[in-house]
Length: 186
Ligand code: AMP
Image (cartoon, rainbow, N blue to C red):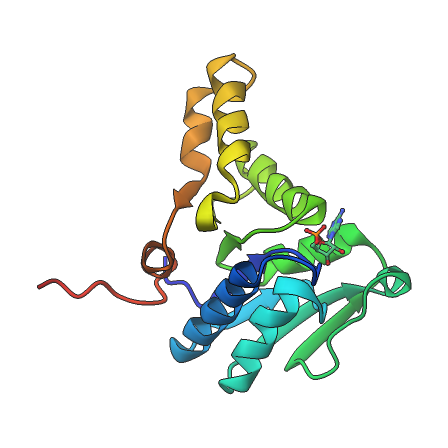
């Protein structure tokens, strides 16, 4: 399936290592360069803000989906190409799902994990078959991956569950899996 819209789940906190913010910026640039659209939660902070700003700076298209109630603790980005203001977190996740062809998980917190597991569990019960790619940048998700393996090896998830997601360790792999950059054979 051709990927046109890339959904990025990632952290909304600013006080995180610069290397993780930079990886958001790098991915945003590549998404815009490849003429793909970014779909994300619509916030202006943390890696979320970094990805969105990088796409916008490169004249790319960004769709944000932001719950009004979240304004108490986060702010929506003011200059997105398109923003959907919604009432609930569930509406946010549904619209992000509907508008996206692939889900990329960058470093993030509980919100990022919630979004990732919702998409994975929908896939587990065959509600969709869209790719989910976990970018284990600088080993950030190592412990999560070990936990997921433990869940599978203990029998709480079937071995086929491993096929629901792809773990990548480098930006090059990520860009290839998301059809953001084609691999050029030597
Ligand atoms: P975090 O990874 O905790 O920094 O959060 C990343 C984004 O996920 C933020 O915009 C959060 O508001 C959002 N988020 C947190 N919980 C949920 C949820 N239950 N459904 C949808 N988005 C959420």
